[in-house]
Image (tube, rainbow, N blue to C red; front, side, top):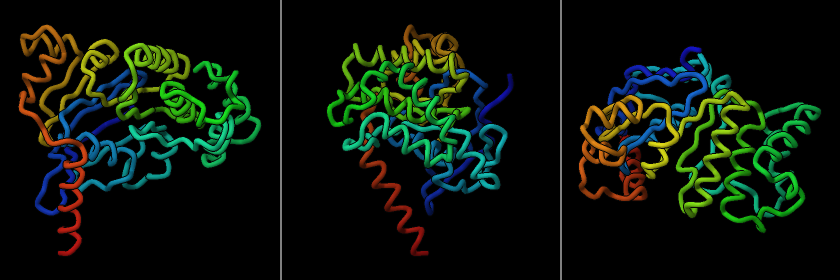
Length: 265
């Protein structure tokens, strides 16, 4: 069906610090694509560029055949996103959270009403539509966020650590919903995760990034074969090393300090 995301020689610099270093990859329509890397590897910066939150320094990228820099509005309407940190309004009901998001995306009311019912049923939350989100479990909130991200019928959904902090049973349920939604909605899934077994099991293809560079790409089976390992986690460690990395907060602080330094120039 062709490529839904195309990235060519994409680079992002903050002053002298190169966060993303001349990377190229593509994502096919309808696949579940895993973008993996240690903390500070450049994953978040890449996703921020693909979702128009950051401008590339050099290179180019397209989402749904729209250019990131010249067709930003079209790109934004082409994707949905579920952030790692919660983004629901706990003082609204599940339905109201969906409704609010639909209004922001200018989804016509007659379509919006139908989509909300369809999506809440798909994630088994229709019977809780009138309940305040503050009463929901972590897994229920994540399911609602995934449903909400699809209200405007995007072509791509970005999932940034969608199962972090959830117990194994809930994680398994979340992935069953994601796979089901991907098939029924015909949506491409672009995910990041530190749970290598999830990527091994769920992803059609994987790109591993480290120090801002693409280290390897292929199916989980290809990566394991090429690294002579038996699991994606072993392949990941072989490609990126086993040294402990700085946590996400430290990585973000580093980027911010470089950005501030660059702004003063």
